[in-house]
Every structure is written in structure tokens, then in C-alpha cells.
Length: 158
Image (tube, rainbow, N blue to C red; front, side, top):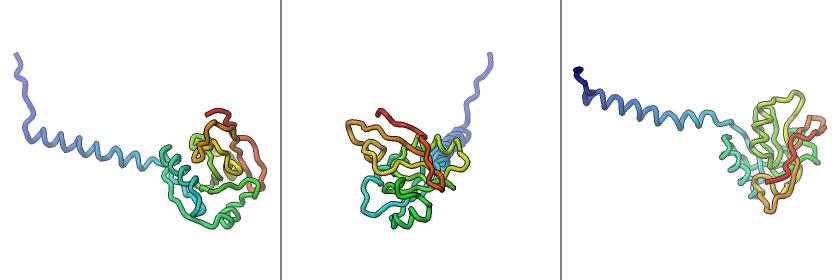
């Protein structure tokens, strides 16, 4: 018959300390994996804040700045017909308007050459942050610095 040995009190405390340290490290590690995004918006716009909440909840870390949107649009070469109420910048890419987080993630994974970013011109009522019911279809476009667009995603149902 073998004798079972039990951990000493010191060993147990060391084990508990290791587990506690590991548990505290998990939220820190998760926070570090969030993709940083800079959002420029008009100070009076309420729907932009809802879009920021959507992005934060989807794994992005938003830094938000109230800005003169005419200047932001000019700086980032966003043609008037593609503009919306807020502009976000992720690395070298521009996200204009209420683009869903899933589309942003898909776009960033593809890293398309020659594309400046994604846009939803205007303010589609069913896009994230607007959230109108019943659902109204909308289209997300890619765009180049010259303003050339192509369909990226068609959203036809909630």
C-alpha cells in the first residue's frame, strides 16, 4: 500500500497565488488583443456613440474625438457622395459611417491593395448604431482614393 502525501500549507498557498495571478492576466491579455481604432465625429451626433459601443462590444478599442467633419473628410480624401456622420481610421484604412464590425474585421483580414477603406454613404437606418426596425437593407462599399467604389457586402436582413 502506498502512502498518499498531501501538499503542505505553503505549497497550497503558492498554488493559489499562481492561479490568482493567471486569472488576473486573462482580462489584460484580452484587452491587449483589441484592435485600436480612432473615431472622428461631430460633437452633436448621438448615433456615432452607439456605433462606437457596437465596435467596442465587437473587439475594437475606440478612441473618440469630436472633430470638424469637413476637415476630417478632406484630410482622408473621402468624396462627398461617400461621406457619413463619422470617420474611423484603422492603420492605413478609413471606415466611413455605420459599417458593421463584422465587415470591418473581414476587410482587415483581406487587406485589399489599392483600397482606401469601407463606407456606407449617408446614414442607413438599419446599420449598427442606427438600428431601425423593421430592417431596411443597405450596402457596404469599398472605395479608392480616386472615389471608385465596389460592393463589399449587401445586408438584406437583420
